[in-house]
Image 1 (spheres, rainbow, N blue to C red):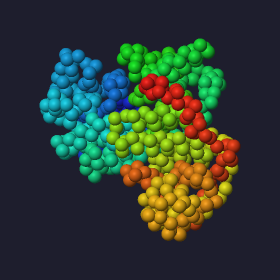
Image 2 (image 1 turned 30 degrees about the vertical axis):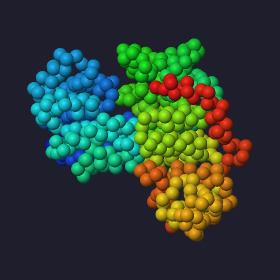
Image 3 (image 1 turned 30 degrees about the horizontal axis):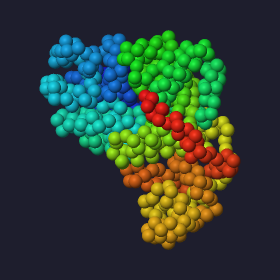
Image 4 (image 1 turned 90 degrees about the horizontal axis):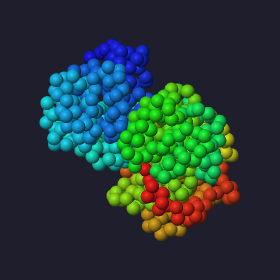
Length: 535
């Protein structure tokens, strides 16, 4: 199979003359029957990577998708373009399901969308074995990893695919996965020497801004008034917030709707269709909204509350500016959001390691919101992409903080971490740098290392502030699969061993510091209400 045929399908079915970066290489890997792991940000064109080979190869491609709405949108889009696609899920009647099965067995369906639960079910297996399968595409593949931000246990059963269909290529695709999650995806699916394709996560057309949550409604009003008629999504933590915010905006003359998982399916579909077709330009929604919506002219995404992790944040803001034109992402945050999430995680039925991971990623999200570091640099480093400049298109770059030559401080921290064999977390590192007399430090012998007490000039909070910047600047990374211990990156080694310099922001003055415990106490009476209203 050659790429010439793929290009013909790209033009005929989708109307594009050329492939986007990496798409052609991914399709060629599928043509070569090679497993592949694809990491491509929202709006980057992941679907083309399996849809084009599916339409040009012999047999039927089976696409695993986690959401019924996502299946419906993609199948309807394919059919509108003349591509033979179908889905089997709970939306279909028994007669409709039989009709799809007959079309499949007759070889008239090139793409079949199913949920992971359906794919692994006993009543679906006989049909699967009767099909000539061209490829398996696992969409939203981060759901299979316990380290991912949206782990779903049913995805872990998909490892049977390589065992029962060893000659069929498996394509795992996701928009958001850090290095640990990518490794786990390949292991969980038992991919055979997979090709790994990681597209750039840089979306320079999206302006990133973060603001504290005081007077957020007034700030949203100001934004909407200065961007009349523009289409956007406002993500909220709780269902009631979606409804209340939509009502308040409508009362101010804006045309909005709300969307959350507690609405009737027909009502949700209506809101989604109204948004896609520009009948309602603004939707106030929980994170249940947006996945799979192909709407190019979304000009802004506002987070009314802090997202629970950087993966979710970046996936959600990726729904604006997909046409490449300027777009804005505005995030509001408060410690109340952190407190609400933390309580929810602690009281969930998840195993402790999952709770700890969610809290660690939540803390990283809060650090992102507070850190005086270029927002784009922080996000790109989080996903393992090198970015050694400031973007000029975020709130930090537009209002830069006071900086100093932080090379010596960074070298002290990195040296201490290396001498402790990169086997400690941030709090222990700070205690060692400050010469703490904790018994654990003496028991482990950390009081004997050369850099013990070398950082007494900074307080505990100031070291936390500096280390967070080092994390966001890509000098450190967190090994979530190893008790969240810190690791020195290649960029960090260049500071430690090669004499490279680093600029860090000065710690905030005492009057600039926040008091999260006091904020949490003031807001605690609202936490239970928010938890009851989530999603």
